[in-house]
Image (cartoon, rainbow over all chains, first blue to last red; front, side, top):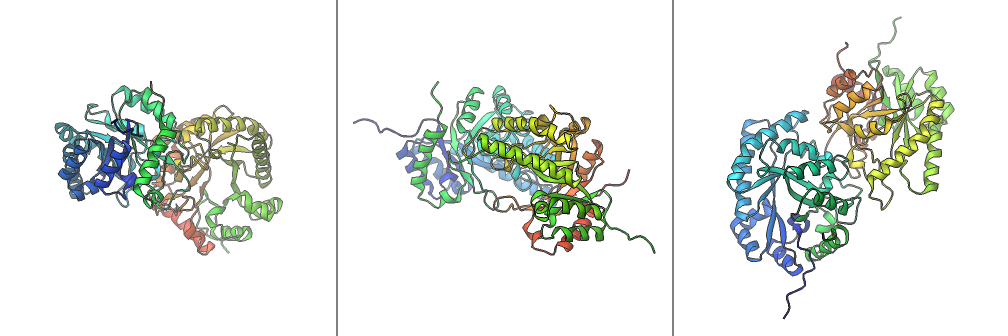
Amino acid sequence: MTAPDPRAPADLSVNQMTVRQLALPELVTACAELGVRGVGLWREPVRAYGVEAAAALVRAAGLGVTTLCRGGFLTATDPAERARALADNREAVDEAAALGTATLVLVSGGLPPGDRDLAAARARVADALAELAPYAADRGVRLAIEPLHPMYAADRCVVSTLDQALDLAEPFPAGQVGVCVDTYHVWWDDRAPAAVARAGDTGRLHAFQLADWTTPLPHGVLTGRGQLGDGAVDLRHWRRLMAAAGYTGPVEVELFNEELWARDGREVLAETVDRYLAHARTPAR
Amino acid sequence: MTAPDPRAPADLSVNQMTVRQLALPELVTACAELGVRGVGLWREPVRAYGVEAAAALVRAAGLGVTTLCRGGFLTATDPAERARALADNREAVDEAAALGTATLVLVSGGLPPGDRDLAAARARVADALAELAPYAADRGVRLAIEPLHPMYAADRCVVSTLDQALDLAEPFPAGQVGVCVDTYHVWWDDRAPAAVARAGDTGRLHAFQLADWTTPLPHGVLTGRGQLGDGAVDLRHWRRLMAAAGYTGPVEVELFNEELWARDGREVLAETVDRYLAHARTPAR
């Protein structure tokens, strides 16, 4: 009897949100059937399932947890709110450690209501990192700052470019704080390729996520991340940039897409593997 | 009898799209009543009214035309389409000259369908500028490249930052090609203040537009530009940046907003003047 012939390449990871219609055990089973060896997990469904139970489930299936999404939201000015955010991020670190992933993705948070000072908000993120990075390092977890597309600067993430994320990361050891490169957020930025190289040179490429850019954007612009190949992003170009910068880690497909969520999750997962092969695979070196 | 006491400050201009529910004669009358001395016009309504007739109307009212919006859409790869775009832009230059405005705003255009090469599209814009800039200069019109927010990079404007716009402008004399700074498009960019200074140093600040950033963004993200004071943009900060860079021209309020369009246009115009005074006026120097 021969081993199954998995369709999925070894570096592919699928973020849980891509097929959030699948419960965690269904996701694990579907990944095993397709040969997907890595998953990115989200805190809310993991906590709902139970962190230890989720860790045991993925471990038993031989699945690697490539990232935990997400910590962050560190821009509050109110001291009590800020303390709550820091405590919540420490919990996120603990959860990442329990799941056996090395990487906690951080989304910085937006402007507090009525606030218009982006620079000050970014400075508060820097202060919070100083508190969180050593805590995470002690538990074997590194923080990956994810710049989100500038269209989220007001309400979700004041860190809009890879250069900003690197500026925040560089005061810390590379093993403690790096960046998460998501094509959906950085594809438009002509300075991002140089920033990828800069991150590679300093060992800060901690995570890599793929999504395509499709238009028109939906109301609220949260749930329109396109299936690979459906949009404007040259995914192979970004894979080559990451490879040239020395990145050899997993490539996580993270789609937030109402249309994909409305379909059969196993079908979407299989499609995602096919699209990855068709649009994002780079020749072996 | 004393002169009327106009509420609007001398530097305020109102872009026609802000109150597109007003026909051109109504707009002109309403501006006169409120003391608004400048308008930014759009090609479509101007052509519908008749370019010469529109020019006569605003001239008779003593209104200055601060910009004509807009030329551009210069990214086509198909030769026939490209030739049509260039011809259309020459017409736009002629219309700007007829209206007596010095400034034609250019929006570059997005990626052609199925195309994923932003750098090549930007290069085609550069090539088109080389054809258009001398034509415009001969007619007393300067081109103002407007970077649009990165959320439009795929389908509307491959020029996403002020630095990109300046890179495109700088091969040409400053009197021929400069930039249009619109707070809606650049407010998130930590490099934009330096780019404003760079543009000022080289005499390329050709237009300045204000809109506020409000969330959630609407479907398609075209018609959610916030009324001044309703959003996340520190408008006075941008006015100070422009002033520090030597800009002394008009300040044009350009809102695309379904809610404002659904209201009485004269009321919206009056509100816009009030909002400008409350949120965007800087102390006289």
